[in-house]
Amino acid sequence: MSSPADRPLPSGLAAAPSATQVAGARAVSAARRGRSWTAMRQRALLTLLLPALAALFVVTILPSIFLVVTSFTPLDLTKPGSFYLEGAGNYRELLRDDRFWNSVWVQARLSFWTVLLQLLIGLGLARLLHTRIRGVEAIRAAFIIPMVLPPVVVALTWKILFTPDVSVLNWLLGLAGLPQPAWLTDSTLALWAIIIADVWEWFPFVFLAVLAALQMMPEEPLEAAAIDGASRWQVFRHVELPLLKPVLLVVALFRLIDSMKAFPHIFIMTAGGPGVATEATNYYAYLQGFSYTLVGFSSAITVVLLAATFALSLSLMRMVGRATDVE
View (cartoon, helix red, strand yellow):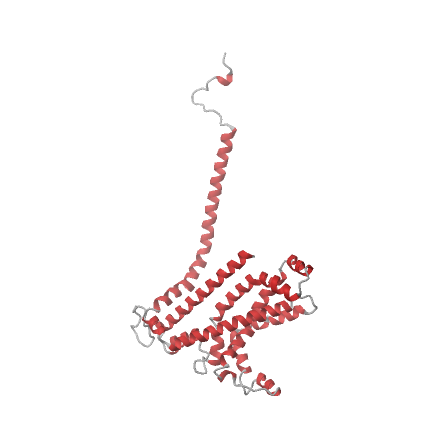
């Protein structure tokens, strides 16, 4: 005699799902809800990002495309109808332009010395003020002042300091019995005057970054070096400096990019003079575009400058990546 469990179900009735089937159905439903929520979240984020992306495209991407296109045209603001493609004529002209190559040499020296001196001064002051002496916070705050001043104010301040008739700096040199040079009209000193002004304005950026890195540095390597009898210089050279390398490379990257934009100092302090002694590449591009109205040629100079900046930045970024991997 068959048991009730073995009897067939009446027609039209389905068997009750097992616990495994119920659990599987619930898992599938939860996965679908999760995918649906993820898709809705991504669509919402994209919708919120669209205005910013549109503004970024209009403000940066579109002008960049126009700049590159213009660099292949002989566009001259005094000649209507000069906006047409002519190939790489502007770039060939650059290769033959001695004044352009002079501007590249000026830009290279300006970028090298400003970045190097800012790194050295910022690193030295950060290490010196990495202490708990009373009043050190006020000293740290005072070093930030040059960085928050507008570049035009900095340029005007240093122009006054380097003008012989009203220069406090030259007055102090006279009191010490030293020569009182005409900084801004001497072809050998004018570029150094701009370098000094730029270093004074931006070394606090390096100072703050390195000081923050020192304050977050782990204590274990320093304590181990002290136990082993290492001197302060040895601790700095073999422990602190390697740990600071990624920060220094990142700071150097930012300062290198910004050194390519040292326009206000040149424009206000020397106007590229005397002669072409301080005519950096960005200032030369400005002269070609706004003084000589050769917008096509100026665009070609700017494209070359951007490409060089991008290449140098990419090499530094790779160095930062390798230093971070080592750490």
